[in-house]
Length: 255
Image (tube, rainbow, N blue to C red; front, side):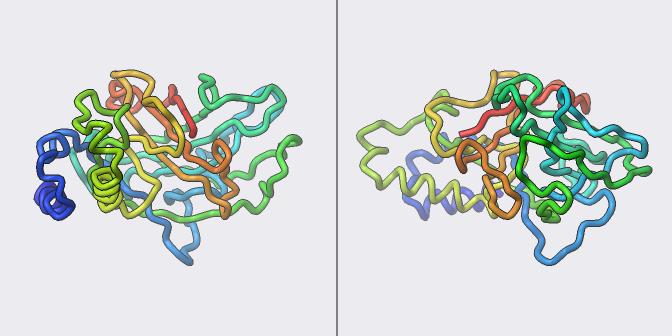
């Protein structure tokens, strides 16, 4: 991948920034929607209904159910040594339209269920949410697959040694070339790991140096996802907790 990146850097006439770009790379995993594929029990998907261990209770906040947004079956990701689980099913839920107006940054905005041995699962349907006008009985669904790639910083807030100056970057030429380069590394706007991408933030959304980006996903009309007026949802996890397969504390931002 690095060799292809170097070739792309040269093609984009960014060779004077080659050292910065190459040293800033992070592994990432693009998440690709599979067309006309019906979900099977335990498969990775966006939307739809979750597959949880038999006897599970739907996660609730007070009397309002969390909203299921997707599940990642790590066994479906091609093997690698980038620090993610080799197996297990991660189910992701978020708060959506609760009475007390939850915020992306709330500690309990994201709820997860990690099933290390997903052998005894059942597909569950959400209880009705009185505050949300969505079709929970037949939610949109997209089966997904994964492709390894690499990522580079999205903007100056994500790199301590950002080499571009305002004079060179804001003239449009280097800016356009850099973002074309970054875009060329991805097959999708939805991905695991890498750097978080967004639409409007003027800061680094990563909570701190001990945290890494876990998942970045776009708004999607088909799934009735609308993060921050149609922007991006970003989920983060502490490096140590990821290594210990502990997904109990996930932070979020959107923008």
